[in-house]
Image (cartoon, rainbow, N blue to C red; front, side, top):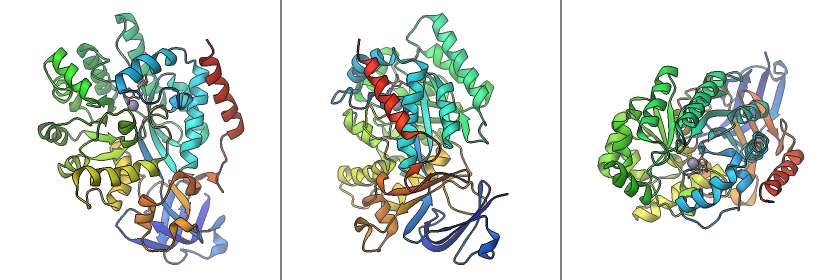
Length: 431
Ligand SMILES: CSC[C@H]1O[C@@H](n2cnc3c(O)ncnc32)[C@H](O)[C@@H]1O
Ligand SMILES: [Zn+2]
């Protein structure tokens, strides 16, 4: 058993709104104690970390990403969703090899861990590469092979089979750091009978579902034209919400649809940066939360964001909804922090991360608070939302393992990944 003590630290536990100073003890992969003084004499610990000048908080949880798409950062800017997908993303993604996905994912993992994200949701193709990268990096992730059903029946079958096999192979792996889901990409890319088959597979495997839903006005309108229903009623009719479901975006929702999502306990991953950049709109987050819908935060990919900084998403969530509602208390700082931590964990059915309390897994990050933009030391919850960024993170621990120390990732070769990602992009765009 390995024991670690962090002393002289400042802690945001997310158990309540208080900020506490003192010590946190870790035994193997779990937090075992938090209090003002050490739990045992210092010489009893394998490792004692001086937390002076550091703020410790739960690691951030990114509930919607396509990590490999970091290879396409800056490749298709300033376009609306459908044009961006059909004219820029899908043609080049069609050329991605397993190796491209590996290096793109590693590039994203590097960015995420160095910026304080300890868990992410990933929906993509070549998912064995993604899972191996997660395993090697030490991160926690909920992974799913996204399926697009705009293809002949035999190809649909093969994709679904692959998604099922991936989910079976990886669920619970890496000491439980990896979990899996089933993912029809969206109602506009999967015919109804295909969605029903994917939902049935999720039932058979007892897994949740992750999908894109109600992201753009055009999507809602075309769904109505094609199926006579808006996306929420359409997916409800296909039985999706009978399974635990996490939807990405949920931008264009009526009051009635919000009530439907609340009734089924469907969770919404709010992606403010991506929704702004693709001009999709602004999700009704205060209304969703008021109705009891669990709302978390996602970056979406670096091709539509264009970074994976979860501090930025928390800040956007706190600012945007004040701006559009005219209500200065809409999404206060503590709620934005809940969305980025504990609510993110709950959204993907992880009940052992998201808070710094004894018994929880040791997923935590350290922020260097001895910097000008964190003075005066008034309110650290406010500072984490309105003043902090990914660049302020110095150390990251996942499942009791320090994977970032002093700003350096200990588990991945940063120089090699940057070199290979550049080479992948150049090859993909050379012909
Ligand atoms: C089939 S795996 C993932 C698939 O999703 C595409 N994608 C990336 N961002 C978005 C978004 O905001 N809405 C819809 N689809 C998106 C990506 O290009 C992949 O093809
Ligand atoms: Zn997405």
